[in-house]
Image (cartoon, helix red, strand yellow):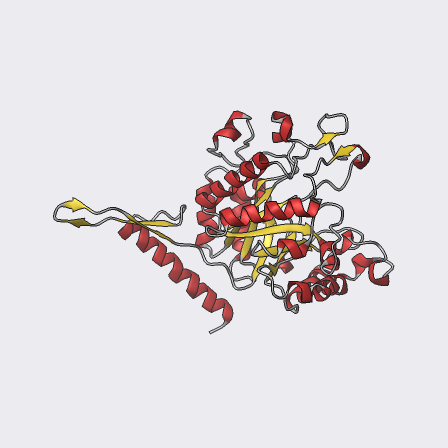
Length: 376
C-alpha cells in the first residue's frame, strides 16, 4: 500500500471514530472533548471528560490562508479538492492579522467592548470540521504586538514616542508594548478561545519589537536590567506555561535569526531562535530568499538561489537547536520577488528543508493564496 493510501485509510478510520463518538458518547468535535455519563442505582454519575486531539502529521506540509479564503465556501471547496491525495496536509488560517481585528465572531467580552472583531470566517467550527474531515491539520495564525485596534482603544498598552504619544511604523500601524502583562493576557485569551473552537495549533506572529518607522523617536522603556530579548523570552515562557498542556504552539521569526543562534544578537527586535526554541513546539523562521541581503552568501541576487540560501541557515543553526524543545518548520517562498518563483524554485526550498536534520515541516506563504497545481 502506498504512503498516500495509508494516510487515506488512517484519516478515514479517525473520522469514523469521531462519528461514532458523536452518536454514542455525545462527542463534541469542535471542543475536542467527550462527555461520558453513566447511572448507578438510578443516580447520574458525575461526567468524565476525556480530551481528544486531531493528530499532527509527522511532517507538516502546509499552506497559508487568509480569513477571507478560509471563510469562502467556493475557495474552500477548491482548495480541499486540490489537497485531496496531495502532499499538503495542513493549513495556517488567520484569526488575527496585521489589522488587529479578530476575524471570527469572538465571544471574548473585551474584544466586544472595543469592537475588535470582524466576522470574516462565519461558522468557524464548521469550517474547521471540513478541514478535519479531509485529514487536514489546522493552525491558527495570530499576530501579537502589531495591533492598531487595541493600541488606540487602550493607549496605556501602546508603544509610545519619546513625547508620550502612540508610536506608528512606516505603514501607520500602532504596536503594543511587549512587556505589558495586560497585552500578554489579551493575546492569551484569544489563543485559548481558538483552541476551544477546535484549532490544532496556535502560530504566533509579530512576536517582536518594531523593525521599521521612526525608530529614533520610539521609547522602549524597558524594565530595569532587561533587554528586548529578555522581555520576549519572558513572554515566550508565559505562553508556554499557559498553553502547552492544551495545544501545540509555534512562533514566526525573521529568517536571519538562523544566522545568529551562536551569539546574542537579537536583530534589534528581541528575536533569538535559541530562546524561542526552549518554549515552543515549532519555530518558523520566514526564510524567504527574496528577503535576504541581495549579495547574501556572495550571490549577485540571493533570491535566484533559494535552495542554498535556506540550506545554509538550517545547517549553521543545527548545533544550537539540536537539543531544544522546538523543531524548525520554516515559512518558504511561494511568491515572486526579485525572481520568478516557479516550480523549480519552490521545490529547491522544499528539498533544503526536508534534507535538514532539525526540521519537521514547511509552510508555503503566498499573501494572495494563489497556489498553482504544482504546489500539490
